[in-house]
Amino acid sequence: MAHYSIYIPALSFLSVFAALSVCAAPKSAAKRPVAQPASAPVVWKLKYTEDFKGAKLNGKLWTRIDRGESDWNRNMSLRDDLVEVKDGQLHAYGVKNTDAASDSRSVLTGGVMTKGRFAVKYGKIEVRCRLEGQKGAWPAIWMMPENPDGPWPRCGEIDIIERLNFDPFVYHTVHSAWTAINKPDPPSAGKGTIKGKDWNVYGIEWTPEKIVWTVNGRKTHSYAKVGDDPERYPWTSPFYLMIDMQLGGSWVGSVDESTLPVAMHVDWVKFYSGARAGKTITEFVRP
Image (cartoon, rainbow, N blue to C red; front, top):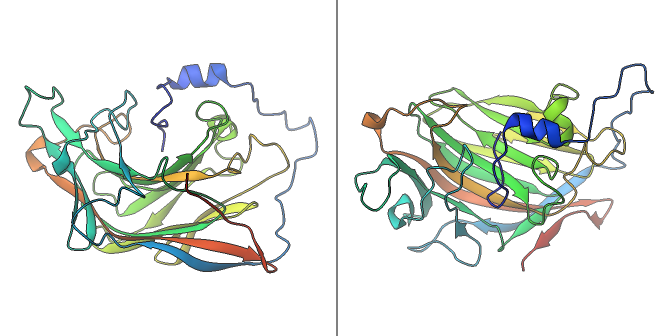
C-alpha cells in the first residue's frame, strides 16, 4: 500500500526519494546477491483466533484507526457507526457524510488495528473477508512495524491485500527503502484473483527468508530476502495488523458518493506460530 504509518507524517514520493540514502548499484559493480535458502521447512500451528464474538470490539486486541494526512487515511473517522461487531463478524464501512457540521469530510471511513495491543514477528496470518466493490473503494489488510526503525518506507510495510473499485483481483505488496527505487528487483508487488462478491481467505506466511501471500490457500505472490542488506529486507521486527475500509485517493480515484455505503466484512482472523526443526521462529508481542 503506497501510504504511510499512522504516526509517520505524509511524504511526497519526491521527498521520499530525496531522503533515501539507498541507491541501486550499477550492474557491473558487484556480484549480485542470491536469495537466502531456508534450512528446513516451517511447520505452522494455530495459536490465536479472533472470531468477533460478542457485541463490541475486543479492546484487548483492537483499537480504532484515526484520521491522518496521508492519502489512505484522510477520510478515517472514530465515529461509532463506522465499525461494527455483529453476528460474529467485524464490519468496517465507508459512508457519505450527512453531518457536515461535526465533520467537514464528504465521505467517512472506519478501520481497526492491533497497534499497542498485539504484534507478530515471523508468523502466518489469515483473514476471512468479503469485500464489497464500489467506485472509489479501497479496502485493505496490511501491517506496519510496532516500533519502526526509521521513517517510511525504510521501516518496512507488508500489504496483505488491497482491492480497488470492482477489481476481480487483489494486490499484494511490500514497501521498503529498496523497493521504493528497485520495485522489480525482485518484484515487490503481485496479484491474486478473487471472486469479488464472495468470501475469500487472505494470508501471508512470513519467515526470516521470505514472505509468501496466499488467497484461499493458494500461493499468489512471494518476496524473498536477497543478500544481507537490511534495507532490502526490513521485515525483521514485530508488526501490527490493520483492517480498514478506505475511500478515494490518488491510486483508486474518485468516489461515487451516490452508491455509498460500502463495507468490508471480516469473519475471522487467525494467527499461527511457526517452527523449524523443532525451534519456534515466531514471536508474539502483547504489551
